[in-house]
Length: 365
Ligand SMILES: *Cc1c(COP(=O)(O)O)cnc(C)c1O
Image (cartoon, rainbow, N blue to C red; front, side):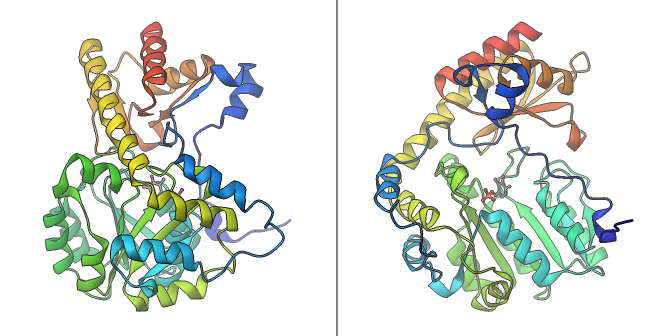
């Protein structure tokens, strides 16, 4: 019998938001009638400048990408006021998380994460056989993190702010106070996948990667182009940290891990601040409609610092049944049963998409 690495035995495959293609195949619904509010993608697409720029380089596909990634690193370095040596670029920030796990953890390691958080931390931890320690609180509670840190001496602590899938965010001051107390041999990962939204909503939530680089040798900040920048399909994310951390991560990076088209798309997207700001402002306008809807329907809502909301259902509604029924109507949302929450996570879409969601949801309850 073909036996595999024992570490894989208790890993559940990551369940991505269902793609539109699957709903077309399974339910025979026309693609134009399907609305995907499941993966926190930008419903307004990406900057139109990106498409023009990418079209221009389409003839350049036979050559490997520029592996120094100079153009994108220059752009990130300018944006965040950090050196190019403080930056690593991954095929999504997911890939940087994978590098971090292999760089710091092994089967004797402990990884400290929030009770409910981004599923990939646990999956990558299991790749290396590390043990997962979770807080009890639903929101990030840094006092609890600190107590567990003292008790368990973890190799890596993941802080996801704003957090996926609950949308809560940590105050920058609290975060830096926490980091001040952590021993330099514990790696702290600050995952800011939705930071563009959080800092626009409330400046006190803004975690500045430059401060992390200046003050902490054991902390890395992660960002991505998949959310506010609308480039989920391009797979580009980045880590910003002290040079020594970046140097170790580079040992794990496969060559050409980001494609020519993706590098170009991200470089151009980063410059179009107007597009991103517009997306963010529309996002929070539309989030208000979800709050009103929840109030009207007497559903608990966790409004958030991100581009999604979580609707917490009461005992008469089951989140698995609701999300399946929505799916049959061509509406893809995220069931949070897997996180032990009777809730659905809905990406805030365009005005039209959200109206459709309200309509479909009302038909079910
Ligand atoms: C979406 C997301 C990421 C990473 O996305 P990539 O597409 O791999 O860059 C990382 N962390 C959180 C919390 C996310 O929601």
